[in-house]
Image (cartoon, rainbow, N blue to C red; front, side):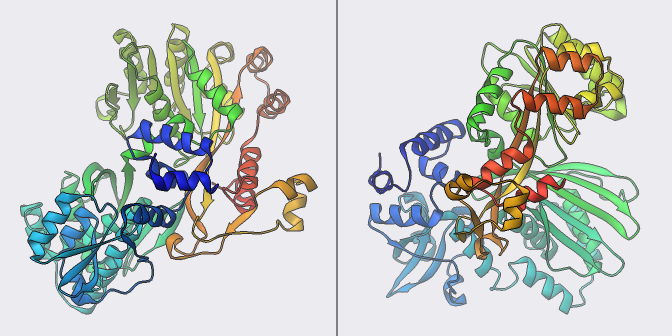
Amino acid sequence: MADWLERFVKDGTIGETQLEEARQMASNIGITVEDALVRLGYISGSDLGRAQAAEFNYEYIELEGKQIPNSVIELVMESMARENVVIPTGLDGESVVIAMHNPNNIDVLDKLRFVLNRDIKVVMAPMESIQGAINRHYGQTETESVDTMISEFTETAIEFTETEAKAAQKGDDDDSAPIIRLANLIISEAVQMRASDIHIEPFEDRIRIRYRIDGSLIERDSPPKRLLAALLSRFKIMASMDISEKRRCQDGRIKTRMGTKEFDLRVSIIPTNHGQAVVMRILDRDNIKIGIRNLGFSEDNYRSFQNIIRRPNGIFLVTGPTGSGKTTTLYSALGELNRPDRKIITAEDPVEYYLPGINQVEVKHSIGFDFAMIIKSMLRQAPNVILVGEIRDTETGEMAVQASLTGHLVFSTLHTNDAPGSITRLIDMGVQPFLVASSLMAVMAQRLVRVVCDKCREPYQPTPEEIDFFQINDEELEEGEWVRGKGCNACQHTGFKGRRAVFELMTMNSTLREMAFNSEPSQNIRRQARLFGMRTLVDDARDKAMAGLTTLSEVLKLSKGGH
């Protein structure tokens, strides 16, 4: 164990249990233990940076709020800074001071010495801080930020129809073209800000660009309307779409790399009254490697989940609205089951993440290759585990049931508000009640709640209204770690950074099966499930607020149907 890690354990910053959890996560997704500790929120990036700097005998630098002169920034090209996650911070005599998160990377140091032809003095800073500083400062030189590029385009009268034509012909050959740089910067900025989606929407006199961060849409500066055609062409080229098609919907995929990480972007374009609108879903491959242990289960739910996914047959449903983390949960389960002695096949619309060792089939509605047909064909492949992306109709539901009754473990998703409502939904869809009762082994509803920012969290006392609404007793009030975020640059002054799943796991038993067989209303099933110990979404979120992960305001939003 590293010296700094030992110090964290000795001074009580982290416990042995937390350290073991981080080690398990690091092993599961192929990252360092220290990165796992930061991701889990047990230590901050700043704490890690200072400890590592002391370990390696380097100076630690705080980049947040630091202004670096343009003359220094210009010493290192943006492409080199972004690729290697480094930034020049100043001069020390004839030496250039370079901030790095990994000072032991000899290749990067040699490259910098060769390019700069000067001595290098290394200081340490967290990776996130360096990436943030890169975004801020390279935007101050020339046109290398979204805001400054949009400002430049607004102030000039450049017509981009010619640029559009050139971009269509050249593809990626000329990365210096203004529109190409702007398109790349929109994507890189969204990734750096941890956005899950990019929305580009045309209106009568402007283009609106918004990023969805932690479930909330944040608006960026609006480019002039005349840039729309050129931007659309660029994104279509990147996603291998037909740039001449302007009347029909199109879907595509973009593969990109930011630093050492690879991202996939699922692109959807639809025609609107004022032009074509673009939505790009950012798919971070690391999300699906998180591992079941780190999804956010309580101990009881974790044990139940592990038992469910190891059953030989039956249907397991995960429910929730779009963007509630259903895919991450199911992919984590598949990753746990992905062993040489099991054959796993998935049917998805579309395939979001590519999983090694798993047969993934994409729905193609244009040729009639839908979920029901894929399941029918799957069964001839003799799989052990089947994942059906979504049960949308009677035929798909019945095929999934039949697959489970013939000895297959079936995972799928459904759009319902809670776990008990899934039984009613399947029956309303046309699946026979006796089939639902005999095949369904468990249903899990989930949502995502925002996590309090680690850098600006502060303790607070719940209000009398909150105490009354959530029925918090004196013991819970005393023992609970009640926190909230003040708002800082790290969280865009929201007080939240990141999200954590909350769950409602209903495991079927003889009583619940009988109620399903009799087509009883979902509220009756829900009442009975709670008597058997089911924790609701609000219960789980309340526990996480009490543990200092989220706030009671987030729980309140969830209780009122928000997500």
